[in-house]
Image 1 (cartoon, rainbow, N blue to C red):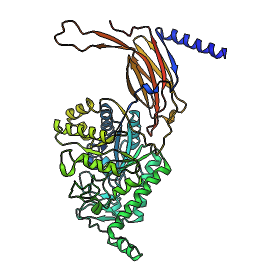
Image 2 (cartoon, helix red, strand yellow):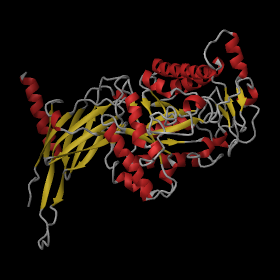
Image 3 (spheres, one colour):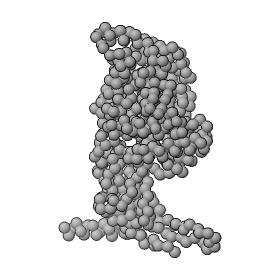
Image 4 (tube, rainbow, N blue to C red):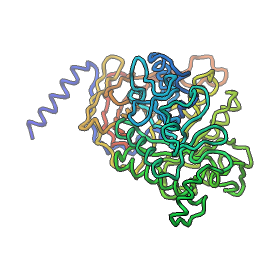
Length: 526
C-alpha cells in the first residue's frame, strides 16, 4: 500500500515538473457526471445521389483524381456544417459504384457500363475511409429493383446489362425504363446478395433503400407471367396483396440478413411520405404508395424491420393538405417499436432566405416532436455545394451551431464502451490532453468536455486521434450597458475540469473520465 502511495506521489511531482505550471488529477467516472451536460444528439445527414450524376461525380468519366477531389469536397463540406452522416448511392440500377463480382461498374462513374476507374481505385473503400476519418457515418444506398434508365450517362443498353442477360427478370415499362420483377424469387436473391456482399466486404455504417419498389406509374406492372404462375400454383391473394407480400418478404429478409452478419449496421428506408392517400385524414396526394408502388411502408415500421425511418416529407409546414408536422406526427404514432424517426427534407431550388427558413423550422419542429433522438436527412448534397452561403450559414449559425453525435440504437446494442484513461498537462497557455483505451476498436468517436469557469463546453474528436489541445483560459468581456464610457469589464476564465468519453459506432457513450486542472493563472476578474 505504501509503495502504491509513493508511486502516486512521484507521478504527480513528475507531472508538475513536466508541465511547468500546473497538474491534473484523475477523477472517478461517475462522481460528477450529473453536473456535465452531455453532447448534443441528432442525426444530420444528406443524400449523395449518383444516378444521373446528381451529386457525385459531377459527370461520367472523370479521372480518378477529380472523382476523389469532388468526394473530399462533399465530405469536408459535411464536416464544416457539423453533419455526421452521408447516404451514398452505390447501386443506381443493377450497376455498382464499387468493385463488385456480381454487377458491372456503373456508367455514371466511368462513362461505360463495366469499365473500371483509371487509374484504378475502389470508390466505396475511398468513401468509407475518408468519411470515418472525419467522424462521418457512411450509409450505402441501393435501388433493389431498377434495372435501366435512359438518361444522361447511361447510353444504350449494354450487352452486359441485366436487361440483355436476363430478359426474363427485367420488364420493360411504358416509359422505356426496365424494372426487375419484385415477385420473382430469383430477383429477390440477386438484390439480397448484392446488399449482403457490400455489408460483408466494406466497413459501412448503414444500408439504405429509398421509395422505389414497384415503379411510379399507374400500377399496371407487366408481371402477367409471374401472376399466372402464382395463381396456377394455388395462390389466393389479390394481385395487389401478392405484390405487396413480395416486397414485404424482401424487406424482412434484408433486415434479418444484415443483423445476422453485422448487427451494428443500421438499416433505413426512405419511403414516399404518405402511406396511403388520405392517411392521415387531413392530407391528400395524387400518388398512391400502397396501391401503385405496392409498398406497405406502415407495416415495415410497425414490425420494426428498420433501425431508422426516413419518410420523404418533402412538403412545407404551411401546405395544408400535405403539412410536414401533420404527416410526421402520424408516422411518430405508427412507430410502435420505437425506431429512430429521422424524416427526409428537400432543399428548395432557389436557395434563398425563405427556403432556409423552411428547413430550419422543419428541423426545430422535428426536434420538438421527437425530442429523445432527433434527426433528419436532406435531399440532396449538391445544394450545399453550389452557391449555398445563405442555407449553409443559416444552419451553421442556427441548429447546427454545435457538433452532434448520432443518437443511439439501443435495440442493436445498449452496452457502452469502457471509459478512457485521461492525462492532461498545462503547457504555457494551452492544456494538452491525451487518452488511452482498453479497446480502441470499440470506439468510433471521442468527446472532450471542458469547463471554463462554470460553463461546460465540448468538442468531438474522430477515430484515429487520441489527443486534443485547449486554450488554458479565455477573456470574457461584459456586455456594454447604455452609454457606457469606460471599457467593459473583462474576466479571465480558466479551465478547471476536463472529462473525456468514448462513443461506439452504435452511439453508446461511456462514463466520463475526469481531470481536475490546477493552474497557476488567476481565474477571477481584473
